[in-house]
Amino acid sequence: MSIYAISDLHLSFASPKPMDIFNPVWKDHPRKLRENWDRMVSPSDIVLLPGDLSWGMTLADARPDLQFVEERPGRKVLTRGNHDFWWQRKATNRIQKTIDKSFTFLQGTSVVMDGVGITGTRGWRLEKWMAMTEGDPSIQAEVAQSEKVLARELKYLESGLASIPDSVELKIVMLHFPPFDERLQPNNFTAVLHKYNVDIVVYGHVHLTGGAWLEGQMDGIRYVMASADVANFVPRLIIP
Image (cartoon, rainbow, N blue to C red; front, side):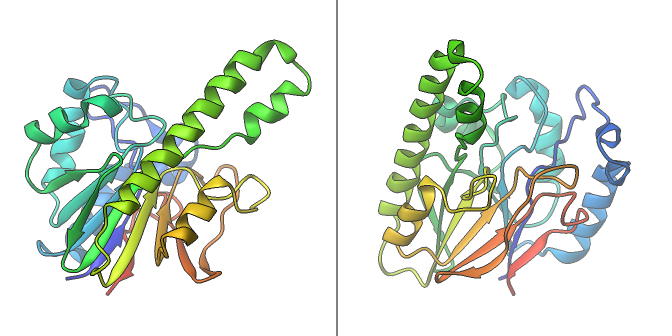
Protein backbone atom coordinates (compact mmCIF):
# COMPACT_ATOMS: atom_id res chain seq x y z
CA MET A 1 0.00 0.00 0.00
CA SER A 2 1.31 3.44 -1.03
CA ILE A 3 -0.24 6.85 -0.31
CA TYR A 4 -0.48 9.54 -2.97
CA ALA A 5 -1.94 13.05 -2.98
CA ILE A 6 -3.17 15.46 -5.62
CA SER A 7 -5.50 18.42 -5.23
CA ASP A 8 -7.20 21.07 -7.34
CA LEU A 9 -8.20 18.80 -10.21
CA HIS A 10 -10.73 21.43 -11.35
CA LEU A 11 -12.66 18.99 -13.52
CA SER A 12 -15.68 20.17 -15.51
CA PHE A 13 -17.00 17.40 -17.75
CA ALA A 14 -20.67 18.43 -17.42
CA SER A 15 -20.04 22.02 -18.43
CA PRO A 16 -16.48 22.38 -19.72
CA LYS A 17 -14.41 25.20 -18.27
CA PRO A 18 -11.03 25.41 -20.03
CA MET A 19 -8.30 25.82 -17.42
CA ASP A 20 -5.62 26.72 -19.93
CA ILE A 21 -6.93 30.29 -19.94
CA PHE A 22 -5.07 30.59 -16.60
CA ASN A 23 -1.89 28.80 -17.67
CA PRO A 24 -1.02 26.71 -20.77
CA VAL A 25 0.09 23.81 -18.56
CA TRP A 26 -3.61 23.04 -17.98
CA LYS A 27 -4.27 22.20 -21.64
CA ASP A 28 -5.88 18.74 -21.84
CA HIS A 29 -5.18 18.22 -18.14
CA PRO A 30 -7.76 15.42 -17.56
CA ARG A 31 -5.85 13.24 -20.05
CA LYS A 32 -2.53 13.98 -18.36
CA LEU A 33 -4.01 13.23 -14.98
CA ARG A 34 -5.63 9.98 -16.14
CA GLU A 35 -2.47 8.66 -17.76
CA ASN A 36 -0.23 9.49 -14.80
CA TRP A 37 -2.69 8.25 -12.18
CA ASP A 38 -3.40 4.95 -13.96
CA ARG A 39 0.31 4.33 -14.51
CA MET A 40 1.31 4.91 -10.89
CA VAL A 41 -1.54 3.98 -8.55
CA SER A 42 -2.70 0.45 -7.74
CA PRO A 43 -6.17 -0.52 -6.43
CA SER A 44 -4.86 -1.02 -2.88
CA ASP A 45 -3.21 2.41 -2.72
CA ILE A 46 -4.70 5.49 -1.05
CA VAL A 47 -5.11 8.76 -2.96
CA LEU A 48 -5.68 11.94 -0.93
CA LEU A 49 -7.71 14.64 -2.71
CA PRO A 50 -7.71 17.84 -0.62
CA GLY A 51 -10.24 19.97 -2.41
CA ASP A 52 -11.37 21.67 -5.63
CA LEU A 53 -12.13 18.44 -7.43
CA SER A 54 -14.97 19.83 -9.57
CA TRP A 55 -16.27 23.13 -10.90
CA GLY A 56 -19.82 21.72 -10.66
CA MET A 57 -22.30 23.88 -8.80
CA THR A 58 -24.51 20.93 -7.86
CA LEU A 59 -23.92 17.25 -7.14
CA ALA A 60 -25.56 16.42 -10.47
CA ASP A 61 -23.09 18.72 -12.25
CA ALA A 62 -20.18 17.11 -10.41
CA ARG A 63 -21.14 13.49 -11.03
CA PRO A 64 -19.22 13.13 -14.34
CA ASP A 65 -16.14 14.49 -12.57
CA LEU A 66 -16.62 12.10 -9.66
CA GLN A 67 -17.08 9.27 -12.14
CA PHE A 68 -13.75 10.17 -13.75
CA VAL A 69 -12.06 9.88 -10.34
CA GLU A 70 -14.03 6.72 -9.50
CA GLU A 71 -12.64 5.05 -12.62
CA ARG A 72 -9.09 5.66 -11.46
CA PRO A 73 -7.44 2.99 -9.26
CA GLY A 74 -7.05 3.40 -5.52
CA ARG A 75 -9.05 4.29 -2.43
CA LYS A 76 -9.87 7.99 -2.53
CA VAL A 77 -10.11 10.26 0.52
CA LEU A 78 -11.62 13.70 -0.10
CA THR A 79 -11.94 17.04 1.67
CA ARG A 80 -13.69 20.17 0.40
CA GLY A 81 -12.10 23.08 -1.42
CA ASN A 82 -13.30 26.66 -1.79
CA HIS A 83 -14.68 25.90 -5.29
CA ASP A 84 -16.45 22.63 -4.38
CA PHE A 85 -19.92 24.20 -4.33
CA TRP A 86 -21.43 20.82 -5.24
CA TRP A 87 -20.38 19.56 -1.80
CA GLN A 88 -22.30 21.38 0.90
CA ARG A 89 -20.72 20.55 4.24
CA LYS A 90 -24.02 19.62 5.89
CA ALA A 91 -24.76 17.19 3.04
CA THR A 92 -21.57 15.16 3.51
CA ASN A 93 -23.27 12.04 4.94
CA ARG A 94 -25.93 12.10 2.21
CA ILE A 95 -23.32 12.42 -0.52
CA GLN A 96 -21.26 9.61 0.97
CA LYS A 97 -24.23 7.24 0.73
CA THR A 98 -24.76 7.96 -2.97
CA ILE A 99 -21.14 7.76 -4.17
CA ASP A 100 -18.95 4.79 -5.04
CA LYS A 101 -17.52 2.91 -2.04
CA SER A 102 -13.95 3.74 -3.09
CA PHE A 103 -14.59 7.31 -1.85
CA THR A 104 -14.35 8.54 1.74
CA PHE A 105 -15.60 12.09 2.39
CA LEU A 106 -14.14 13.79 5.47
CA GLN A 107 -15.88 16.64 7.29
CA GLY A 108 -14.86 16.89 10.94
CA THR A 109 -14.31 13.13 10.84
CA SER A 110 -11.43 10.74 10.29
CA VAL A 111 -10.67 7.38 8.76
CA VAL A 112 -8.03 4.77 9.58
CA MET A 113 -6.63 2.86 6.62
CA ASP A 114 -3.90 0.27 7.04
CA GLY A 115 -2.79 1.79 10.35
CA VAL A 116 -2.75 5.38 9.06
CA GLY A 117 -5.12 7.93 10.60
CA ILE A 118 -6.38 10.51 8.10
CA THR A 119 -8.50 13.58 8.73
CA GLY A 120 -8.98 16.95 7.11
CA THR A 121 -11.07 20.00 6.41
CA ARG A 122 -11.15 22.87 3.95
CA GLY A 123 -9.20 25.33 6.12
CA TRP A 124 -9.36 29.11 5.69
CA ARG A 125 -7.20 32.23 5.37
CA LEU A 126 -8.07 35.65 6.79
CA GLU A 127 -5.31 37.90 5.53
CA LYS A 128 -7.13 38.97 2.33
CA TRP A 129 -10.09 40.22 4.33
CA MET A 130 -7.94 41.88 6.97
CA ALA A 131 -6.01 43.76 4.28
CA MET A 132 -9.24 44.94 2.65
CA THR A 133 -10.52 46.47 5.89
CA GLU A 134 -7.62 48.91 5.93
CA GLY A 135 -9.07 50.77 2.98
CA ASP A 136 -12.77 49.92 3.24
CA PRO A 137 -14.39 49.74 6.69
CA SER A 138 -17.74 48.94 5.04
CA ILE A 139 -16.80 45.26 4.70
CA GLN A 140 -16.67 44.62 8.44
CA ALA A 141 -19.60 42.22 8.07
CA GLU A 142 -17.63 40.13 5.56
CA VAL A 143 -14.64 40.10 7.89
CA ALA A 144 -16.82 38.96 10.79
CA GLN A 145 -18.27 36.18 8.61
CA SER A 146 -14.79 35.12 7.54
CA GLU A 147 -13.73 34.93 11.18
CA LYS A 148 -16.71 32.64 11.84
CA VAL A 149 -15.66 30.39 8.96
CA LEU A 150 -12.13 30.23 10.35
CA ALA A 151 -13.40 29.24 13.81
CA ARG A 152 -15.64 26.57 12.29
CA GLU A 153 -12.83 25.09 10.20
CA LEU A 154 -10.53 24.96 13.21
CA LYS A 155 -13.26 23.14 15.11
CA TYR A 156 -13.66 20.62 12.28
CA LEU A 157 -9.91 19.97 12.26
CA GLU A 158 -9.74 19.47 16.01
CA SER A 159 -12.79 17.20 15.96
CA GLY A 160 -11.29 15.06 13.22
CA LEU A 161 -7.92 14.78 14.94
CA ALA A 162 -9.51 13.95 18.28
CA SER A 163 -11.36 11.05 16.64
CA ILE A 164 -8.15 9.35 15.44
CA PRO A 165 -7.19 6.54 17.85
CA ASP A 166 -3.80 6.72 19.56
CA SER A 167 -2.89 3.32 18.14
CA VAL A 168 -2.30 4.59 14.58
CA GLU A 169 1.19 4.45 13.14
CA LEU A 170 0.92 7.79 11.34
CA LYS A 171 -1.36 10.87 11.37
CA ILE A 172 -2.05 12.70 8.11
CA VAL A 173 -4.05 15.94 7.80
CA MET A 174 -5.56 17.14 4.53
CA LEU A 175 -6.18 20.88 4.19
CA HIS A 176 -7.24 22.71 1.06
CA PHE A 177 -5.96 26.13 2.11
CA PRO A 178 -2.28 26.26 3.09
CA PRO A 179 -1.56 26.20 6.83
CA PHE A 180 0.50 29.37 6.29
CA ASP A 181 -0.40 32.99 5.65
CA GLU A 182 0.64 34.83 2.50
CA ARG A 183 4.02 35.64 4.09
CA LEU A 184 4.49 31.89 4.67
CA GLN A 185 4.19 32.29 8.43
CA PRO A 186 2.28 29.62 10.41
CA ASN A 187 -1.39 30.48 10.85
CA ASN A 188 -4.15 29.40 13.26
CA PHE A 189 -4.10 25.78 12.15
CA THR A 190 -0.47 25.15 13.12
CA ALA A 191 -1.11 25.01 16.88
CA VAL A 192 -3.81 22.36 16.35
CA LEU A 193 -1.49 20.29 14.17
CA HIS A 194 1.18 20.29 16.87
CA LYS A 195 -1.29 19.66 19.69
CA TYR A 196 -2.24 16.33 18.09
CA ASN A 197 1.27 15.38 16.94
CA VAL A 198 0.44 15.32 13.24
CA ASP A 199 3.10 13.70 11.05
CA ILE A 200 2.17 14.88 7.55
CA VAL A 201 0.07 17.77 6.19
CA VAL A 202 -1.06 17.73 2.56
CA TYR A 203 -2.54 20.92 1.08
CA GLY A 204 -3.30 22.70 -2.19
CA HIS A 205 -5.15 25.86 -3.32
CA VAL A 206 -2.02 27.70 -4.49
CA HIS A 207 -1.20 27.52 -8.20
CA LEU A 208 1.69 28.25 -10.54
CA THR A 209 0.05 31.53 -11.58
CA GLY A 210 0.24 33.08 -8.13
CA GLY A 211 1.02 32.67 -4.47
CA ALA A 212 3.78 30.85 -2.65
CA TRP A 213 4.07 27.65 -0.70
CA LEU A 214 6.32 25.69 1.61
CA GLU A 215 7.27 22.04 1.54
CA GLY A 216 9.42 19.72 3.58
CA GLN A 217 10.03 19.03 7.27
CA MET A 218 9.31 21.92 9.63
CA ASP A 219 9.08 21.64 13.41
CA GLY A 220 8.47 17.92 13.22
CA ILE A 221 5.74 18.02 10.56
CA ARG A 222 6.21 17.16 6.90
CA TYR A 223 4.33 19.53 4.56
CA VAL A 224 3.41 18.48 1.01
CA MET A 225 1.99 20.84 -1.62
CA ALA A 226 -0.26 18.83 -3.94
CA SER A 227 -1.94 21.25 -6.39
CA ALA A 228 -2.30 19.47 -9.73
CA ASP A 229 -0.53 22.04 -11.89
CA VAL A 230 2.35 22.40 -9.43
CA ALA A 231 2.70 18.59 -9.45
CA ASN A 232 2.54 18.54 -13.28
CA PHE A 233 -0.63 16.40 -12.95
CA VAL A 234 1.33 13.55 -11.39
CA PRO A 235 0.01 12.26 -8.02
CA ARG A 236 2.54 13.10 -5.32
CA LEU A 237 3.95 10.01 -3.61
CA ILE A 238 3.59 10.59 0.15
CA ILE A 239 4.27 7.11 1.56
CA PRO A 240 5.98 4.52 -0.73
